[in-house]
Image (cartoon, rainbow, N blue to C red):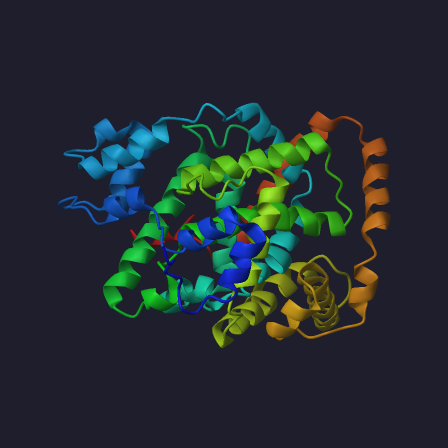
Amino acid sequence: MERHIPRDLVNADLAVRRYADLGERWLDGMWQADPPADAVVNDDFGPNSATAAVRVALTHGVEAVPDAPESLRELFAFLDDEPAWVDHDRIDNAADALVRHTPILGMVLGAASLLRGAGNFIAGKPLALTGRYVSQPAVRSVGVGEWLRHVLTRGGMRRDGGGFAFTVRVRLIHAHVRKGILASGVWDEDAWGVPIPQSYMALTMAEFGHIAVEAMQILGVRFTDRELDDIYHLWRYVGHVIGMGEELGLRTERDHIAVEDLYRLTSPGPSDEDRDFVTALTEQYLVPELANLLPGTAPIRTTVARTVMHSLQRVFIGDADADALHIPDSPLKHVLGRVGPLLALVDRVQEFRYPDLERTTQRAYKVRDVAMDRMRVDYSVEHDLVDAARS
């Protein structure tokens, strides 16, 4: 049977030849959205909204929602039925491991993960069509950070945890975006598949998983094998809660790498909107945040931070993809690409100086929360997620 492939995807045949069944599932995933969440946002909640109903169900259970429609009951039957493979001790261990390196994690999520995603104009099209792609990238980044703060907290992904609730709310935001785009009539499904498909949801999990981990390792972070396994376990469960099926099998580092390769392989490349997004993200958020850490006068700090950030971006995503996104080049990339072993040694010395891992971890959580509170003030963020700003 001939497979229907979104017209603007490239290298579809190569994806199947290289990855066989996984390549076929990747292409099929371009037509698969999130039926349970989509059904909720398309249902009738009377004088209330789907978003408000979901918040009530998260806090008090679906029975607390007056006249809850069957779509909401089915969504929460899925959410409340935790898979047998979930291990919250492992998830907490992953949160601890990542939070101990919060400053570097925050940097690589902006300078590596988001840039990797920006290399595909189809993936960025939903945000571009909603008008939120280039506008206020710092505010959007703080919103992602707020979600991440709740996910990367001990107990955060338990049913009553803040990370679980935030992740379900993000799932509803995605469904609302799909509904709005499809209702507008501007989405070309034959060319792009469905908005926010399963395949690109998988890439998003890889952005927080392997892409971030690899960039952190470039900067000298060294996770143990157990910590790495637990980190991938964490993102498997976050993917489950956010609406990803098991078809693309994001369980291990190898799975993440395969998804990243399929994303790049089939990507038609970035658009001018993607390039504008990268410029706005860099100038309005990444450079100012890095400049805050540097000594000297404001103009000097900004100039140095800009050069360092562009160089790091090239180290993280490679020259070819950086060229496509019009990221300026600098010979400093050759230096930064080799600092990992030195920074790893510094990290090791810190472990000897502060051998009490539990106290170090507790301190890291406090430092993380102070930094998030500071950014909320600096960028005038008064809500936690965009659904709160809208309601």
